[in-house]
Length: 66
Image 1 (tube, one colour):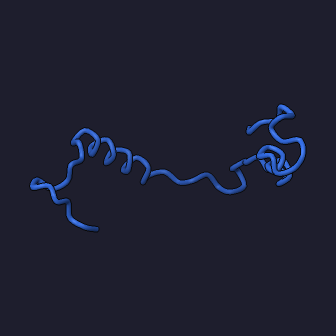
Image 2: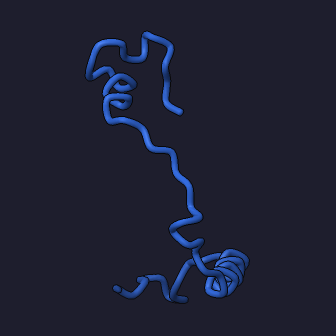
């Protein structure tokens, strides 16, 4: 990483730097949810083809992005 050309070094607002440090400390103590608990919606790829107008019935059918 290159050095900042400013004479005083970094230009980060001290309040922002403090909030970032607090957030990093808080996040470091957490673990992600196990994969078997995390739920995501799965759609057929043709759904996206319709949404983006790749196949007939694109956005003009009233179907939009979720």
